[in-house]
Length: 356
Image 1 (cartoon, helix red, strand yellow):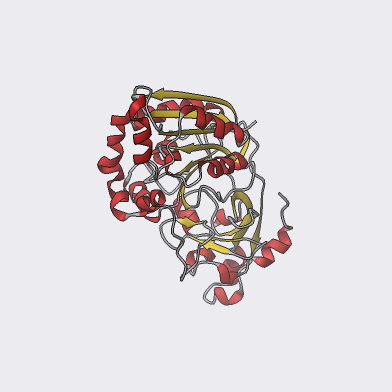
Image 2 (spheres, one colour):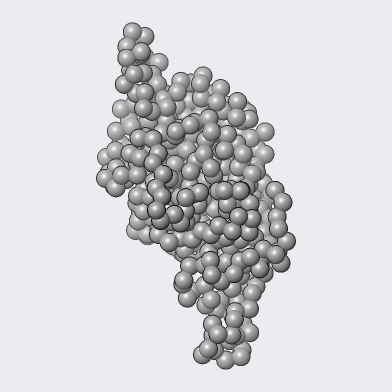
């Protein structure tokens, strides 16, 4: 996807769109460095192209600084392929500290040079939905989506709700994580997006593994993301340098440029998506060539479900997109993914496919 020249993009990124935080103009030597992911594992994928420029602050921003301080202060502006505008998919310009971590993203402002839309972390997450910044409009989603926007469901998700999945054959978070890691081996060192992350149960596990240059916990539910942020802040193993970001976005309108992500995980999510076909098509779009998609969900019936009750069960579950094993494979292949594999246990299925 074509990028605007740095000079033009920098001019577009004026001071007015940024969050009103003094930290954006604070002096820091790290602000003059180019953006780089930090990881102990070398990626097999080419890194995203990034361009940056250090902008000298206006004189009226440093009235109490001497000449030396004024010369050394700078606020970096980046054109990066980590995040894209959800409206036009152009890479966003970023002004603020570098890095995929909570503190750096909170202190940054983002702007699309193409459609002039701005984005920031005004809450505990970076809002990259099409409706970000709207005050008088609230888009209502299907009941399967709205349910998980509830504060009560978000609070209970890791406090009993998720544990009930074992009744349907889910092996448990630790084993599911181990199984997913086997499929993600070739994506180590790259960027992993955990779509429909909920309260960040698996996002935190991927970040703690240290195998990825960045982990993006992504969900549409504001309350789930607040829970995710809260769990991260209370976990002593995380610090400000941990490469994890919390982002609000729609799975059918992912805020990433095409062919920019190394791995996508979707745990117990597909059945909640309004359109699994549109969502998987989007996942295929953002994956690099060779990128891996791993998901888990509930099957409409388990292999042991008697045929006589299956029609009645379908009616009861009609508000959810519970698919069957062959249907999931068809959706993945139709959307352009290859090398499909799956593991089935009762109503649990883990499936994987890759971008050719």
